[in-house]
Length: 253
Ligand SMILES: Nc1ncnc2c1ncn2[C@@H]1O[C@H](COP(=O)(O)OP(=O)(O)OP(=O)(O)O)[C@@H](O)[C@H]1O
Ligand SMILES: [Mg+2]
Image 1 (cartoon, rainbow, N blue to C red):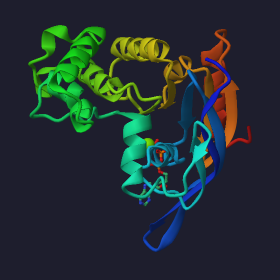
Image 2: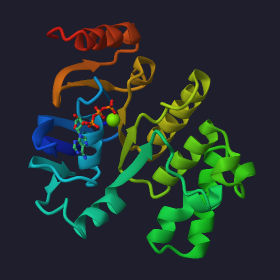
Image 3: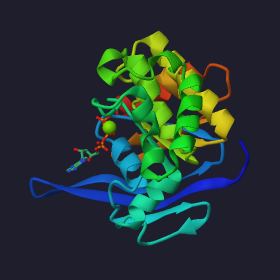
Image 4: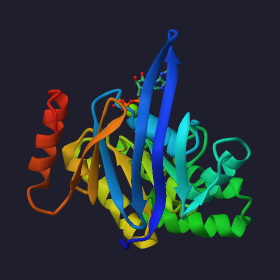
């Protein structure tokens, strides 16, 4: 990790309407993500974590605030067609439910972003082949998602998210459907990739073990960052659990 800030978020707010009532999903959220940094986002259910990822991935538009990438800020980045360009050039998404296309093979799922970028067939074959090897999916390239385990499906989803080498990866509960050992393997793959491509990652999780893989943990409650923890490599899990428990109990932190 170096000190270069890749993503800067300033006073980001998002309010939804629900049954005629405003829901303040994000309230003046500010933080920055450095090049090569992995930030875990933890928080109570409904605290705005998915909303944050959706806004940072320009899938949803904030009501106010600024998001800058590499110091560049564009007011219209949340509007099409710029939103699509922004996503294509900057963002890889990984979801809890994998979101693979069920009629496509492993190879076709992983190569899809390159196809959308209109890269040549040779390039697509080369890059997809490399990625399948990195993900340990070489023997599965002609399989369809339904023929794979959860961990394998998530590796396909990671391969697809990383194939364009996006500088920023956003992951929402990526190990939420996996057992402990598979979750560990997925996190190892993800952190290896982060080192290889020097990417920056924002990983939403409710699992303190997942959060220990991060450089920093941001704790959300009620649409706000209420605490922050820097991982040291010693006793991180106990400290993260302690902070999270306090937030769950509604105590001031
Ligand atoms: N499209 C929407 N329309 C209305 N309200 C929404 C919408 N999306 C989210 N919300 C509300 O915004 C708040 C934040 O939701 P969000 O999904 O970001 O929470 P979360 O932290 O990801 O929760 P969880 O841990 O349960 O996934 C919640 O009160 C939710 O009901
Ligand atoms: Mg969520």
